[in-house]
Amino acid sequence: MGTMKTNPEAIARCIQEARTIAVVSHVNPDGDTLGSATAMRLILRKMGKEVTLFCDGKVPDMLCFLPGAELFRVPGENEGPFDLMLAVDVSDEKRLGACAVLKEKSRRTAQIDHHPTNPRYMEENSVDGGCAATCLLIREQMRTLGVKLDQEIAVCLYTGISTDTGNFSFGSTNADAFRVMGELMEHDLPLAKLNRILFRERSREQIKLLGRAIESMTFRGNGKIAVMKLTKQDFADSGALSEHTDTLVNYGLDTVGTEMALLAREADSGQIKFSLRAREPKRVDEIAKLFGGGGHPQAAGITMDGTMEDCVEAVLAEMEKAEG
Image 1: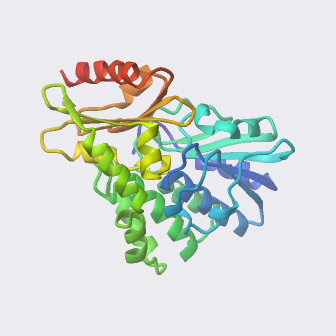
Image 2 (image 1 turned 90 degrees about the vertical axis):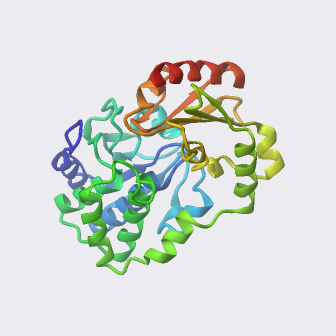
């Protein structure tokens, strides 16, 4: 179902031969990477493995309900050694952040991912660029390992599948996603409660930041590209954090007449971070790759050095070319 081949058998061999396993999520973690990691922790513990969760970034408040979310940490100087480092939903080595040091502290390395731009940077790679969410690949991995579903694992997998499919609304959503959802529902998944947390509830700080983003919205490319910008001052005034930007770019894409959307924000590091979105058949992954970023055809990200104005104009120039 995708542009690359999964290899759950190779991942299973790595896991079966390991005792100590470091499970790693990507920087600025979202629902799919955290759902994948917390699910893998539960799966591996059922197999009697010793598991440590790592992530270079704070778990967003809205995802703290995930079982084991409080266990994530940034690697310290004296970590390991580990028999296996397993990265989940990490599209390239840069997205490991500070967790990249674990590669040197692990006897073997492996990954499970669904990003089509993934360069297969581990020893063993199970990657399907056409899959809607990494959590769907975790479900596939469970079958290979012979581990049964339970309610806690179902909560983790639902979180990743639902968030990476836009609550089952993106073009990547397919029959496989719904088949797995049927399995999850058979394990008393608290669907209404989780859906409200993930897709309805918003903090006051995020609502204030949303107001700033919408107020900044302009249009380019004959009105077909929505552009939003957030400065450090916007974050300071609203009391919001970087995690609160997660879905804001979608408001640009949801505006009637737009085919692509861009949200640029000033990070604490001084870099400019971009969220790019597109409606099919337009795509933004190839644009992101031009600037060292990556992602999916209709959802991608970039981190750039430079001023807000210069970075935005550079990315917009490529988006306008793609818009035609």
